[in-house]
Length: 614
Image (cartoon, rainbow, N blue to C red):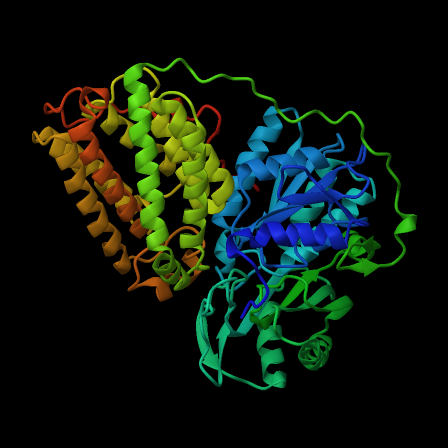
């Protein structure tokens, strides 16, 4: 159990506040942002390493900020990627003028949000590179190494990269060193029990007595297979055999080694296990170099551990051995590191003075309907929050309901405060959703709402044809940014059938509210049908087999939301009249094909190449 909390929705913010109070000698909190920079930073002329991801993994990420390690960290909610906006704010605050490296584990939400941040930082003139970590050998085979998750090996890659940056290397060198460290790092873990999110009564998964989960993730996911409990000697053999099987050709005999506890496994247990691990490594001709045993990348209160090895050459070993001094990790004497003055010419955060576009009366009336729709979306997801979390926990981290409610409440508040037409209202709602929800769902719902708003605009009457085109633009934006297709077991498996059925029903002569109702029913049915699919993208992919038989949480929530919006539209048809929809006449079945690119000028498409966003 997670025993200490107030309001679970404020857990991350309270963690940040408490850490800042305890460790102000190491970090400075960035105003208006979910994270820290190194005390005394940003450092002029120095490459800045910014690491991040969801909360729940301490000492990653805040515990690694300090001399010889990271220059900044950005934290999302528990097991949820920070939003693009939050990454940008921390990176700008940490920028010393010599380039910024963003580094994180290889998860869909992190790839999307850090990738979007990289594009924005580059547009602002900051030389930004992305390095994501792929050390988890259980999550994909060697021929698909780029699809592997980042688990405890992230700590090794961050340490080596931070040392390279602190030694005065330029941004090209730091990026190269970190990529080399990632390519040389391999991890494998086991779990004895699942973790429990703050406020929840049950863990995300349970392990039967006398059994273990092999190949676990660090976001509360179960392992890829279940096996019988084994004594420490046999467990050490299983861990060592797994990582040594991935030994690269030409690797030397020296390796950085971490035996990592996941939150509830006691240090004494880890020492028992490490005694066997070191003997086995030595027998295999491997010399552990300054090994570390303890909690370095946790998963709240999960019981379990993982073994990570980074095969060292002379360069990587130099940076692994280099001194560091952070709240959670200390090595050597950091007074020997180069010193840098604080950068004082840091560019101000972007300040926008854009006023809402002039809105017509009919668009302002439509904005009222949009506000009611967002309120209905919030209510229905909040009502189903716990069930959505249970569905998500089967092959994921169980936070889908929590994240959606958090994002929708922010969207609702932003929409209520916005003044303008329906386009502006949906745009600010999408921005708020993406920032507060974080993760993959936050980003995709954010760009989807923004795309819908861009098509509806602030002057035109919202006719069935225009709303249909907006739906297609939103779906296209989500598909383009998320890089998913129908059948991948995502929200698109409900949204795309909805859009097609809406076309069909409008073309057959139904009015908007009836057409939407039929299409929403199709979305609900399609969402339920995802139970038969295997996940092909995202965090659920490594546990695809476990997920068969359970629908995708994103597709289920999409069906709930579309149904709730339909109820609002039915009322608007009756009471709003020409102020919302001026015509219920049949429209052509084919939509206008508004390109997604035309609605997302502020969010460039993600690039799948070399460390960019997926």
